[in-house]
Length: 328
Length: 245
Image 1: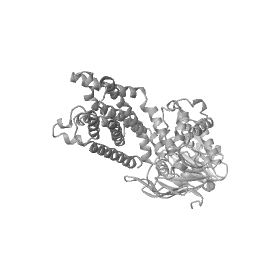
Image 2 (image 1 turned 60 degrees about the horizontal axis):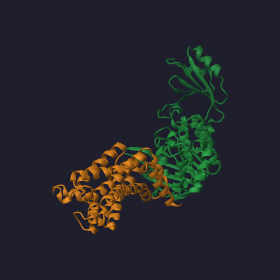
Image 3 (image 1 turned 135 degrees about the vertical axis):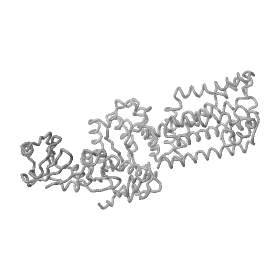
Image 4 (image 1 turned 180 degrees about the vertical axis):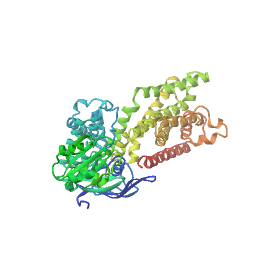
């Protein structure tokens, strides 16, 4: 996809090698001002390495990085005043309180004492942490830690925010709160670069998404264009008992308008352009001695596009690869 | 942006989080007292002879004051990825590391006050050239701080840096002329003394307090300053290469 003219992040041919491993292998990215960009890929795909290079924590082996029209390829620190960074680990100081951590983060960006104290109080309120302001960071729960790390990253009101897996490993309530705060930040003009392996999170938040696999971007497009092929399409995922043989030929003959995918051992996905009647299909299988354990209906989504484009099963976004074979 | 606000707050944060913790302060107070007591008992000359072991006590206080916490704090922050927060701040790396090490330098100098106060109380220290003592302590504090920083960069685990620190500090006690002159060492060991920055700091203190001297004041200051610059430059280069890979 052609890069946007108003790009505030522009990356060309970015490469990072660790020995023989190409962690990032010649990626091109352009993120528009005010955009919400999602970098979606399984663990080990190169997302964190890419974000490290963009934020000045690692040097690229090749390629160029421009942040806010500042060339950061040679001097990784040149644009650090423009960015806020939320790393994949909650790395604030355990011995400082929530309030002290925020004030310290503000001080690192040159905020004066009164300004950073006022800002810290505002952010503690906004992130629902006002009651824990005087508690040490080491005593926070995982979700609270994550919220405070995000608050710390926006103390200096950066126009650009990088987030590396911000909702990974935290409770549902904190995840929801973080997503809604990120959406609000973006509405207020902050450009966001988010890496995640949660497909639904990317679909819910981002306006542009790149799929990264083995250090390479395999697809980069606006969300509506990515979703185009699956719009108005429905799927039924059927899990059968181990040892059962699915009679694909019979299925194809009985339901000629449907597409059957063998997504995993004992699991098949049925796709259609019309809402599916699960009962009919389940009965058909059970009549042929195939024991159905579970049948789940849903509308096709970004998850299906991701599986189609990358060949990686959505449930194995933590590393494993599943092949999706289509049968019509 | 005001970089000094960032630097000052790094120093304050480190002071609060690491250096002014009760165990560290008590270690800083007790360590020089223990060494002084040991040498005075050994010499059997009473507290009035304190001035003869004062250069060694000051140097030890500075060495252990600067190095006991810095290397551990830096390694711990690196491992917990908290150090990344500092690297992400829009401050040049040299400035950042100067701020990061300032706490250790200040704490090392504060430690040096303990034997000096003891000396003032028991010996009066009337003939001491204070104009030499103050810069010598500062340069020794800088050199041993940057040496600790270098060790912290080389280590990945806290226990590694503790082992490395002891591996460097304890031979230094015997090789730097702290309690007996370098010239009294076996000839085979003497070249090693000249490779250690504290040797020149101790020699400066001997100049100031009337002990046996090795080199001229100018040479001592020059070599100590070169060691400071060299150790800081090598540490920065290592951080740049290994930590911002």
